[in-house]
Every structure is written in C-alpha cells, then in structure tokens.
Image (cartoon, rainbow, N blue to C red; front, side):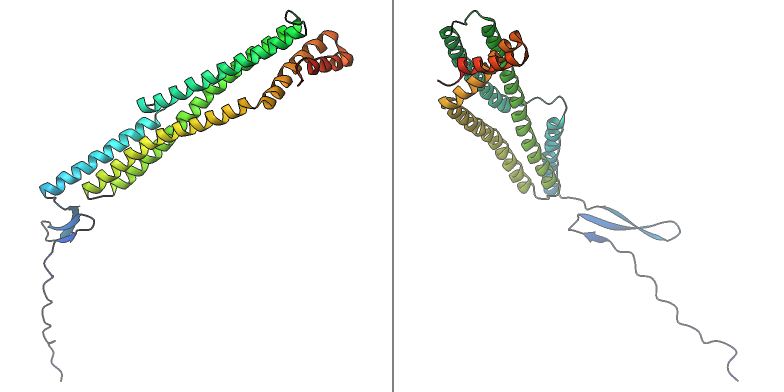
Length: 258
C-alpha cells in the first residue's frame, strides 16, 4: 500500500526584495514602497538632480518661459509691434506717402494743363475730373494703410513661428548650452525678419518707381481715368445714347494720348 501521507513539498523561495529602478534617459526612477500589509507598490518620481543639473534645468525653464511669454504677446488681439517693427513700418509708410504725393502732383499738373488747353478749366467736366482725382487719392491712401497692416502681420507671423519653434525645441532639451544656442539663433532670425521686410519694401519701391517712370503707361492710365470721368459727366448732361457717344468721344479727345 502506498503511504497515506503525501511527501512534504519544498517551501517556495522567498520573493525577491524590492529594488529601485532608475531611468536615466527620461530622468525618473521607480521607488518601491511597502505598505502595512507587506504589499509593495512602485512610485515613479523624478530623479533628484545635482546642484549643477538643477541650475541648468532652471535656465532651460527660463528660456521656455520667456518664449511662451513672447508667443502670448504675439498672439494677443491687442498686439502692438515692437520698436524695431514699428520703425520698419513707419519708414515704409513715409516712403509710400511721399511717392503718392509726387504722383498726385504730376497727375494734377497734367490734368489741369489739358483742361486749360481745351478751355475747360472752369467747366463742369473739370469739376468731375478734380472730384475723381480726390477720390483716387483717398483710395490710394487707404491702400497704403492696408498694405502697412499686411506687412505688420507678415513680420508678426514669422516671429511667432520662430518663437513656437524655440519653445518646442527648448522644452525637450536637457543641456542648457543647447537651449542658449537655440535662443540666440531665434533672436538672430527675428532681427532678420525685420531686415527682410525692409528689403521687400525697398524692392516694392523700386518697381513702383519703374512703373511711374514709364510715360506711356502713365499716359494711358491718366487718359482712361480722366477721359472716363469727362465722358460720364458730359454724357449724363446730354442724356441718352447720343450723350454717351458724345461723352466718350470728348473724353478721348481731351485726355487721350496725343
């Protein structure tokens, strides 16, 4: 007969003692915590930094914080350009207004000379020409204002993109020297944005000047603007299809290319 008693089983080995697990790459460690019942729980926490490491981390955090502050400033609905951008915009607008004034003076002189040559300086047609000239000047000034706003938004958008890139880059760095390099590069590119805006404004001025110096283009534009104004004025006074035809012919004769 077999034994009525089972052979004794060897006792299971004791569980391995809890150990500290460190993740140097991500800068965290898992610490075993034993509760009152003897159960072990692992708690994840950042690895304590040396004084030098903490100083570098603090500097990186400042760079990230400064970048976030600049992002918020550039994103505000009541954003106002900084001193550098303001100077670029003021210089550009002053140049555009100077060019506009010169063009208006040339146009006024040519239109008044042609009206005088035809003996229409005090006519209803002349009043229509002058009214149209004033409206065109007002539209041109409005266009300059819109262009200034567009130029400001362009500079703002490019600087915002630079700061967002710095924020994303510095947030993932552990070396303060790399964060400082990224900040310096961003500052340099930010200055280049303003310089590039100045360059684009200078190119725009150049092409505008080239167009204004083209006499045939100016004469055609002048003839169409003033001729159409006279045509509408005279044609409206006569009335009917005959008035339209006479007004068109008279406008072309007065302000067409000679």
